[in-house]
Length: 288
Image (cartoon, helix red, strand yellow):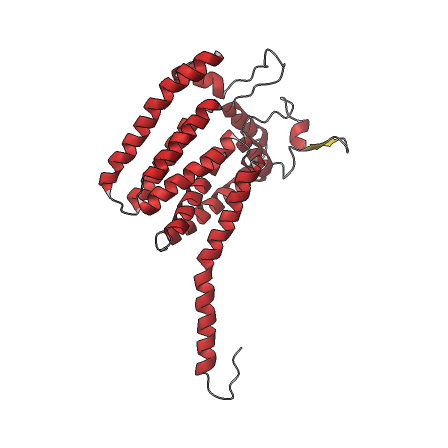
């Protein structure tokens, strides 16, 4: 998750300055890290981030000739990633070549697997099955569909010998393959919808401010945080982002700093207006 966070900042720096050297370095180092950690999700996440960045670039009226470099960057990254991963990672560790994961049978088996592991006997639930199963659990009645089972319904306490409602009724013993499935079970459509609306509002505020700010570093931070914020459904589908302590600390501190910068001009303008009203008021007249 920290790698994806830094990649978002790299795309944000490109949007703010149109300088591609930093972005090239970040994607190259991220590619190396993804190969060493066998993070096959990296290519898909970076591709979606690139598409989102491209849309932002087009919407704000950027220079189209720079898009050729942008497209070439993705093609070059994929061309390097595939053979290097297959040669040095897949072959040496006995894993399947990356292209075999892209077939329909492999994708279906990966996303909708529900079989037990041959070695540890634990359920190996696919992320697609986890989300569809979560939807099936809350679709029993309209109230549960809208509001879910409630916050903490998937938690348990060994000391108190209690478990949440979802765990009691879970056929798979509380296996959590996709955090988005957990959110669907606990919050329902209303809770997940409100969370997504909040993310869209936060991203819109940051993108709007980044277009008019003079500081390129602040604009980089705002563009990068906006991209990461818009991708919350993707992060929840793949991982538990909040357990990434260092990365999430940087993210929330960055969000707080950016919104403090966004609201500061309005506070100054308000205080200045109050001072002007006091000066212009007639003698003896009280103004709050």
